[in-house]
Image (spheres, rainbow, N blue to C red):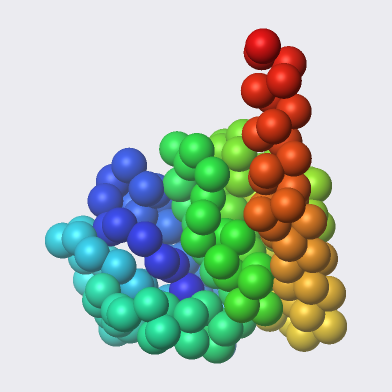
Length: 168
């Protein structure tokens, strides 16, 4: 599942290329679902393997995140990566663009996702997760624990108050 704006800056062309590379090596790969707004469409070579969910209400978004085998975030330009955090809370591990320092650090700190930098690394990460349901479950649990610990209101408030105190 990809969730977010469909635009070049979010890494969709690279995702389409990597997904095409994946299905060439593993024809039994599940379809790629796209959720969100934008006019960027998949190339003809993979168009029949892509499910367009469009923009969905929050409840449907949460259901799709929970139902996905994994979430892919191909963006290098993330300031937080909210959809990754939401996926972990929904019980879904992530494969993220390793060129994003933010996403790479979330995965390192949580153990909830795998970063990739090349189409071959993308294929390896996806295959590893698709072939090991227990690994997917464990990574999603680790990611959810990280989100609850790092982004709970109590922890955010604590860090904010500490920063204010430090600045004063």
